View 1 (cartoon, rainbow, N blue to C red):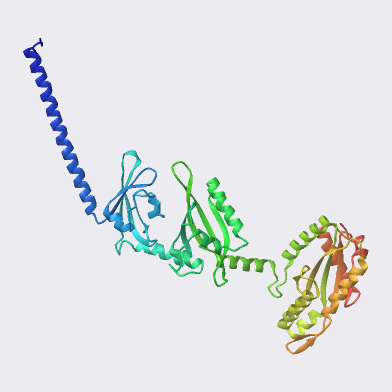
View 2 (cartoon, rainbow, N blue to C red):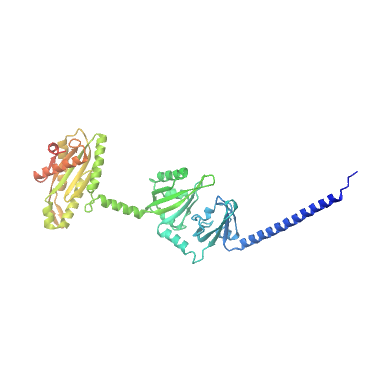
Length: 438
């Protein structure tokens, strides 16, 4: 037989049930209010003309509105934010470019509105009005005219993004071709391909900045110099996903550097190596001769009768004569030999790879005969024939000296000794070694 509930217990149970129902009613009201607010927020979000992105802590888009779909040219949920805003930086407000799904770029204004729980970021992206897009437009134009472009390469695929300025660096009109990593590799000069690839792999493996200078070859054969810098973008686990950076056309810089080097190391009149380059080449030649147990011959040449021609017919005639002398000396020797002008009417010649068993006097005689024969025919300057002679001083490494400075000194002494003996003579440094101090 069931035990009847007492009146107090019934009252207590009723009160508890009433409280639970009241709490449930309040909770349901709150849920309805929150759902209503959420629906209102979503409707407001969808009616905005500005794009809104929600990105997680790893930079992946987890939500966006319809305006973002229209701006991007498709759904962006699940893709990295950097795919759409490759040049954006984490600043509160900035002008940059948004890359659409079709590869076109649009100037936009990006505002970081807030950071949400879990590291999510809320971004408002507004297509720049004419007045607001001036900065972005100037930025894109300045890239083109400064020959600076941005690039973005997905490491595991052929996908490669170029900004407009890069098309011209490879000889194309903007949009003429579809950029790809294979197309890039095909344009890199064959002699530079291995080095560029090694630099990319080093950057991917170590995370170090990528910085390479290399040549590219256009379809018409034009060769241009580019400098490329960039770094690796990794996922949350540190695995490399892509490389991003900038590239700059440095062809003109290379040309200027080459010209400056030419001016620093060559005689401006004859184009021959000057004293600075002559000494560099002589030091290197001595080291090669030492390493391979060979002889080296150094000849100092001073023109006889040049001063009289220069004084009588003027400096222009004298300059023309010096140019002709330099050309004749070069023609008389091998391409591997060096002819330099070290000042005034003084020239020097370096001959390498002489046999250690050769007779020094015979070798010196052969060189002197060859050079004097080259200078013997009259030189026609402004319709007038001029004849000059030369005095040669010859020193041999290592027989006469084993250091560069002393070898030069012996050859110089030998040249003055030949000059004292009369025109078109040579003197070998044998007899001067003991007379020369040092």
